Image 1 (cartoon, rainbow, N blue to C red):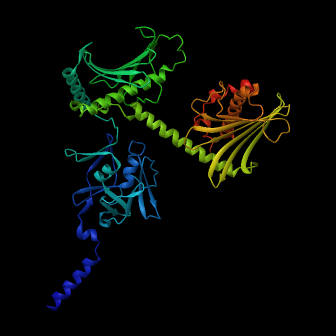
Image 2 (image 1 turned 45 degrees about the vertical axis):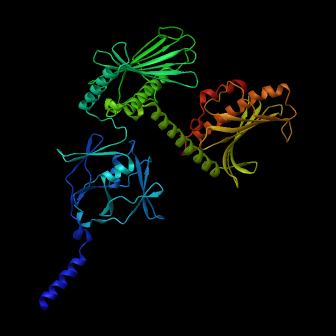
Image 3 (image 1 turned 90 degrees about the vertical axis):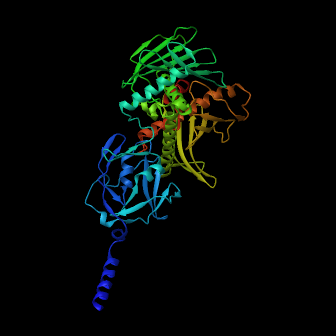
Length: 531
């Protein structure tokens, strides 16, 4: 009896020393395959009590540069792993490496996980070999990617938002569904069966989307856009159940029923981006008075609007809810409103990065002061004109906040001085600016005007409109010329800043006035006035 009791006690002590996972969980290396957006990948994964767990950093690495990109970081203050959607993942090493079996180390993870700034409570996680492993479906539900399973091949299938990797059978099925639906829901018989949807806009424009069974083996998706002045343009995309590329046409009509401009192309659905200019393989016509119209760019926007509207129809019509533009090979980049959102986000990020980089550089490289604030100043003597030009980049800080300011002076050989300033922003591209004129030797301006600068439309060809003016010269002819001088001053100041960014500001030479919304060609005309 004593021997049995002693043996039982030893057995209890032995069990107490074993890992908790060995007692409560069945953990083995998972034989399951992983496919992400149509491609197989090898990574470390475990089956725990019948469910498959994947390393968080492996999934972040595989989804990098997709629509479901997310970053992974550690916040020591919160003691938490941070998952940040939309931010690029930065590898730390060890991703997608299949090493030794570490299943014996598996324990329920005590790690706190935050999604942006909020804790996530419903994630099943294990710590295996010092890394966190999660259920794939849990991560998909949290981050927004689709997870499916192919039992025939034992494959976990991940598809990110907007992934267009549908196979030929999917495309053919979607095409047949759309074909049958058009035949059953056609309003008119024009070039075959046709479905129309129209929309009127507050500015007097109107649009019509048509889905046409051409009775020639294709479906034509047509967007007709009528402008308030009577001109209109039309885009055609001919969907085909088998083709990889689609034939497409863009036409612009002015003063007649015949197009004044027509461009044709083969639209590659996987590569098409509504934010990039169209590459026509054939162009016909030239519209008088519209030679400067960017048909190449506007055609891309029109095709993108066509696809976006078509996608909305798919989502709203009960008979087409199982069909999407992705079935035909298109991606988010092809949809105009999504391309616009992506471009707007990229512009905002570039502007913010440029603003703070220039602010830090101006602080670090101050060699002068402007109104008491540290500034970087560039001075130049215009020998031919006998004038002196000074441009200052100021990183100003006060109790009210901080500001990145540009100051500019142009002193003529007569002693008169034009002065201007512009406050750059980290977000908005509408900036506050001012212009002043000083008589020779004067410490106070005899003219002052303030105005706003919209970077998207600011052009050296046109005088500014002052919001308010002050000074003795108001009401004289000078007040008229001051509008031009203010334009010239801002243009020259921005061009000098751009030169400064490109040649001096290292390692930030990639930054420039384009990051703040300005276009160099629209500014260079100021040189005509200055010279």
